[in-house]
Image 1 (cartoon, helix red, strand yellow):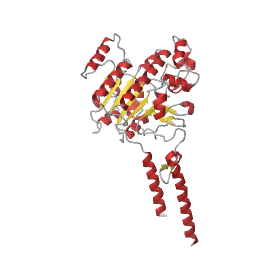
Image 2 (cartoon, one colour):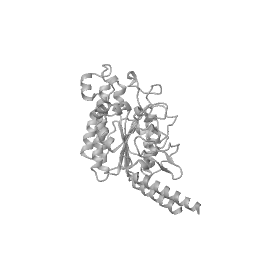
Image 3 (tube, rainbow, N blue to C red):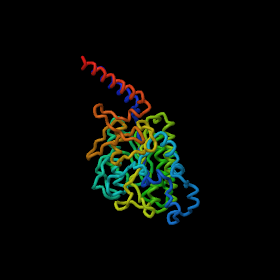
Image 4 (cartoon, rainbow, N blue to C red):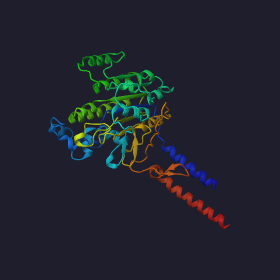
Length: 404
C-alpha cells in the first residue's frame, strides 16, 4: 500500500515538474489608457463606426477597420494581439464568454485604476486624478529593493501624473513622464528631446510615439529588468469623442507592442526570459451613446481586459472560461511569476491562478492538492491510464488481504 502510494505520488510530481514553465527574469508592464474590451475582442463597434457624430469619414474608417465577423475585425485592428499573443499567450476579458476582468475601485478613472494595478490595492481614498503623491507602495519599488532588480527598474508614461502615482520621490524609480526631457546622453535621445521641445501645445498627455521611442531607446541602451510603459492617447481620443482616431491609436498601440516584442525576442538579454503584461486602467461606456465616457456612474466603465505573453504563461490564446479577474490581483500575480511575494504598507490582493486550459475550470483534488486539469493535458493522457491501473491494483491487493 505504501509503495503504491509512493509510486503514484512520484508519478504526479514528475508530471507536474514537466509542465512547470521557466521563471522569467524580466517583466514589461504595458498599459494603454481607457481602451475598451469591446474593441480588443470584437474590433470596431458596428454601432459607433457608422455614426457621423464620432467618425469624420465613415467609409474610409470602415475600409480600414471593418469586416463582417468580430474575429476578422479584431485582427484588422490589433493584428499582433490576434496573431502572436493569441498563439503564444493569453487574452482575458471577453465578456461574450463571461470571461471577466474588472477594476475593483468604484471610481473608474485613471489614477485609482493605475494605483490598483501597480499596488494591488483598491484604495478607497484614492479618488481623483489630482497630482497627489501616492502613499501606497507599488510593485515596482518593491522589486527595486530586491537585489536581483535593484537599479534596474524604470517607468515611461505619456500621462504626466505617473510620477505621483509611482511616488518617484519616495520610490526612487526613474519615471520619464509627459514632456519631460530625457537626461540620457546620445544622439537619438537628443533628437527625441528636440522633437518634444518643438511641440507647441504641451498637454497633460505626451504623444505616445514619443513615449515609446524614449522607452525603446532606453531599453536598448540600459537593459532594465523591469519596465512600465504607460500609453495614453487611446483615452485622449476617447474623451474627444473621436472614434476614428481612437481606433487608429489602438492600431498604433498594437504596432508599438509588436515592435517591442520583436526587439525583446532578438536581444540576448531578454530573449525567452521576459514577460509582457498588457492591460488598461478602466473601461468605457458600453452604450453607443456613452462609449467615450467613464466614471462611477457609467455602465461598463469597470470592465477591462488583460493580455499576457512570455515564459510562465501557458499559450492558451483567448480565454473562454466563466471566470473573474480583478485589476488589484495583477501586482501579486506579476510578483509570483518572478518568484517573489509582493508585500507593501497596505493590503495586497492575492494573485489569480494562472489557467492551464482555456475552456475548463480547475477543480482541486483535495487529497493530493493537484488539479484535474493535469489529466486533460496531452502530457497527462498516460497519467490517467496509469492512475486507474494503480488504483485497480491497489484494490485487488486489498481484496486479497481481506480474504486471507
